[in-house]
Amino acid sequence: MNAMEKIVSLCKRRGFIFPGSEIYGGLAGTFDYGPLGVLLKNNIENSWWDHFVTNRDDMYGIDAAILMNPRAWEASGHVGGFSDPLVEDLETKKRYRADHLLEASGHSALGLNLEELNSKIQALALAGKLENSEGTVLKKIGEVRQFNMMFKTQVGATEDPTSISYLRPETAGGMFVNFKNVVDSFHPKLPFGLAQIGKAFRNEIAPRDFIFRLRELGQMEIEYFCHPSKWEERFEHLRTEFLTWMISIGLPESKIHEVEIGDGDRAHYSKRTIDFEFDFPMGQKELAGLAYRTDFDLKAHSEYSKTDLSYFDEETKERFIPHCIEPSIGIERTFLAVLSSAYNEEEIDGEIRTVLRFNPKVAPIQIAVLPLSKKEELSVPAEKIAKDLKKIARVSYDETQSIGKRYRRQDEIGTPFCVTVDFDTLTDNAVTVRDRDTMEQVRIPVADLASYFSDKLV
Ligand code: ATP
Picture 1 (cartoon, rainbow, N blue to C red):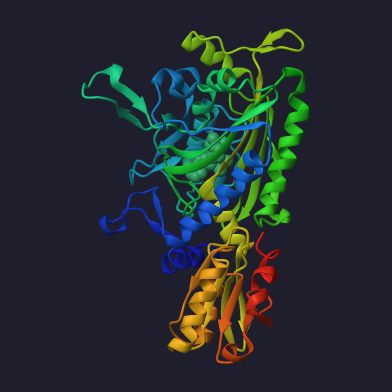
Picture 2 (picture 1 turned 60 degrees about the vertical axis):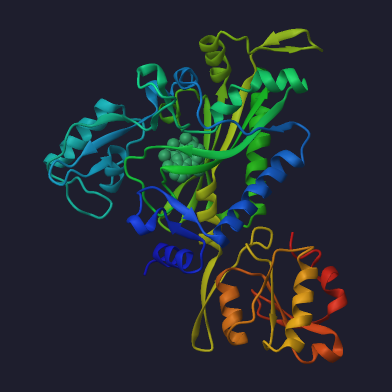
């Protein structure tokens, strides 16, 4: 098994992530979170929210509807241009992203327009040098064309063109359409940001790499508004904060790569973009993006909605459309980055120990309480200890199987500490605390447990 297969298998076996609607054969590009997965996901989201919203005075959280008036997606340019280059293998009828095929064949698609992409693809196919990511040579392929990735749906009971809407392809739209509402209700001073965590939907041509490229995904996004003259300073600030947060949830700095996106390759609205790429098991790929979107969105929404989205600065008496910087990160890509960099296998006494070295801050379970025996004389005090620890940590209680097996199980789900209650506990009122990473064990009085853990779980 390669590294990714091991992670996929662990996710299924231990209840982190399951294939979407699996008993019906699945649905490509969808996955479901299991009991441990939802904990890890919530911890990632909460730490992002704490870092960027709760701990700051210049951020406002919102939670907008997924379905929006379709005019909003016309204004943002998504109806016209949110597309990927699609090409079909005429023999197998399989569809590919043309730029991904070029990359798999050892060429770069950077800076190419649709026409150039098509001629390069056709030339490679003719020469028998066009390959997919599995190394299969594709000979007969169709023309490359643009494929719009928005999921269309119908709102209401009448089936006519006016009832068409879309599942949002990014959460950003919800923030731009609420800019005026927040300004009118909170009167925030520039610079300030709107932050949102939510689902987005993209009809990806070829969903793949486990939860890396999905059709239903979560995003954590900020639209940060500032005076046009201040964008560079704010961009730098958000860039540092983004990186600081990534490191705070346990991503190794050495695996994060900032890539400046060149002129021809940025989205139409962006004057500057940095992609944060990460060393995933399948290679270095985009984890997050930081884009300077100028006044593109507020201007376009002003025009399409006929609503004035300008901002009046009371101090300078200046009226203008604020400029916007957007740090955007996918929840599942963060999840995969956290999981894959935490994954370790090591040999202990001739046996392989699988351990997820999660940062305790995001670990689904932080402390496991394990009575050495199921006997009531141990389970009663152990349950009491677990109940008390729940006030300060995410705790699980486990009394099945041998203690060695239980330690391994907790290692495999990334629990940083195990608290073992044994027969000595009954006389010395102390327990053994085992550290996941060093496997060292220390004896701690039950009364001191809360203070012992106080600085170890954040
Ligand atoms: P890619 O180039 O990989 O398709 P993108 O540049 O289109 O991604 P953005 O539009 O910048 O992505 O979206 C912001 C973030 O949302 C990305 O950095 C990524 O973390 C996440 N994301 C985008 N598309 C997907 C997807 N199909 N599945 C999972 N996460 C995604």
